[in-house]
Image (cartoon, rainbow, N blue to C red):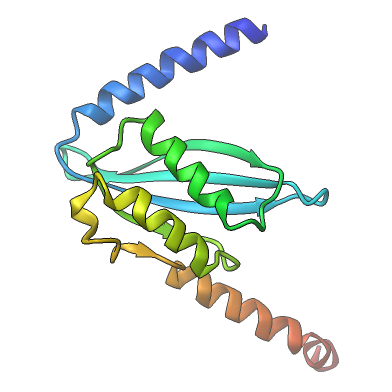
Length: 155
């Protein structure tokens, strides 16, 4: 069963690689970091692009287990591996962190890796530290957590 699953995965990966090669535009990466109760981290790398029919598409291209999710190198290593594995060198437009705890150091580590073969990123100006929507979501959660007791009393 495991062999069949791996064979299916590899065949589908080749199909996705072929379809990505046909895309004339650039790609945007979104990085998300989830942590488990065991303090293991999982880096989710999502690829966003516009297809030939002008429809926005997204593909989850990598999920990597990261034993030290708080390290600054965790995200940069995941991005470097993903870019080379999926043949995205020279095709990236932006990289966005979709995690509140992504540090500036992580962005600084990724910037030179991406900028070398991706002049479209404008010397790393389009390596964005945090997603604005995620930041607002985090702020709203913090406000609701702080006001939890007041909300219970009102109910």
